[in-house]
Image 1 (cartoon, helix red, strand yellow):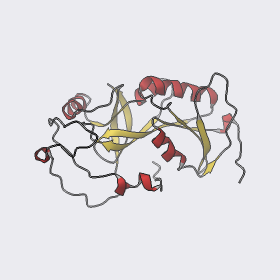
Image 2: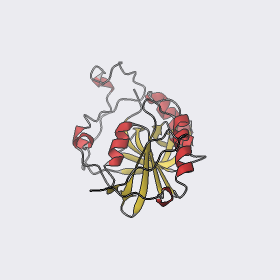
Image 3: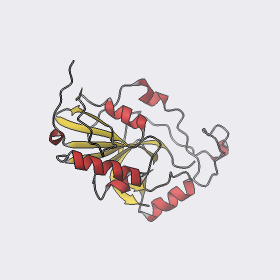
Image 4: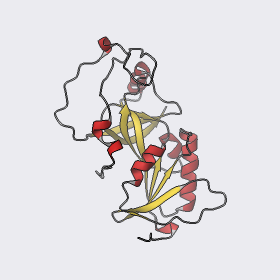
Length: 220
């Protein structure tokens, strides 16, 4: 089926992702994909254009290998310059914290629809284990060698339905990997739901709603 092409001025939703895998999941949310628009000579952003419901949506992703506030600001500036009718701005991806999904305002440092691809299924997320915040994790890509004596005992969830939490999201230029430091910053900011790396770079030029699916506990 031939894709439609509409003008840049017809897009009213801007959606920014930090990682290619987040971008792939976002593309699966589209009800319809549109033709690409001509690229300006000075433009480095890559877009996927389409429709969700009655809304024409611009999807964009940070360049591969780049994360943090500054690359996010550069991407957002180009979106704002090209798509002048955007009114709803979203930053959607993963973050470290407690819970399933965090939606909130950003402190420097809802439309329920879920992707059906198997690689994004909840049952493929692996074991959900939480360690005491002062435990120093043993290096590696997993916690297989970490001490089970430091595990926090928790009651099993009665339901696997996704729970959305609303509150403060902390944004910085480094990945949070320390449980003690995580809790210290959270206390100073009056309680933080999630830690991430791009939102603060967007707020001045691309004020947006930040939505983060929790991928880890920001402790290792």
